[in-house]
Image (cartoon, rainbow, N blue to C red; front, side, top):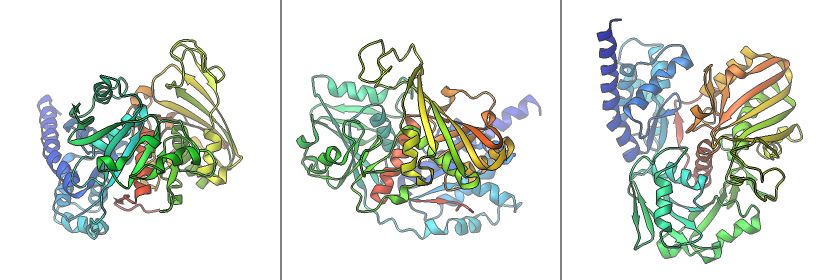
Length: 480
């Protein structure tokens, strides 16, 4: 291909991506339809993001998906009365072109494939969300909720609750939402309403409430009722502590973004979220590591049956550790986080059993905190009932990542060059690094990357939706 041909090809792709953007925006804002390409979200995507999402299809199916091949499917989708669903136009296009050569049948094909969403009636009322705490996870949850701003959005961030309230605090909180050293700048506009103690982000009015404990808050004073309170402080982890939120006027349910104690359900979205019942008013979204490893462990156990194993977590340092050596109640965690690898405990291996009881008593675990600010790696060393090989294991997990009920939790990479910083912003619970897989006979060692902040926050949003009955159908349907 000549140099001019390359440029012409790029120009064509760029123009098609630009033409897609308004359709993608209207589908979500007006109809609640999220469009993806082989799992890669196109909501608020740039033209380059759209082009890159199409290029990634080659990794999955061996052939690239051209934008001119997917564009007719987006056009057809934009004309259909679909509501509240996620549609993978990449998978729909690949399936269609495998059996057709012309565009004549696309509209009929889309009507058949999306019949379930066409029949859906948008009668669900929006639900209110309050973030109790505004640290690393709280601010990322805010970003995820705000990016979905629109008339069709059913999960509405109404308030954040903070301790303090000293002069300048509101602007500092807004600044932390605008700028993030790890995840980059906020995608949009953040304003401060000092008079009313509020932050306005992309048109979302967020009331800022200052309180030192839950019993000081009355949400109804701010027009907030029947709200889900997401506690990301980590201060309370049992029913008595988290139950304080339910005594607040306007609060209906509580979600903890940490492992819970006692009888509270620890939920890994995609694995045991069906355990959430309408009457459950306090639920835990478990830990980032538990969310990263449980889907992969479930997939492996479903086919190969795990006898036992060990989970070693290479985990980025967290705010719980010290910048420089200082007192800490836990062993070793008092040593400088940016300067040391620190061996510490993790309850993730045991916590897996709460979401996946079949593995109770079969796993041990430990963790090493390392001097990176985000993205972690879990090493799963497993003994299996069924023999396997590296090729067999990788082929199976690749299929799980693309065409199973766990496709939104597990990602799969075949890159020889990927490193931790490449996974910043990953929306998956975990990413299987196929090049590092070791498998022979009844032994397998798997390496699973995960953005312990953003990927985990995406899982939390899934649990939020489940608790509030706001889940939507994903199409095309999975053939299992």
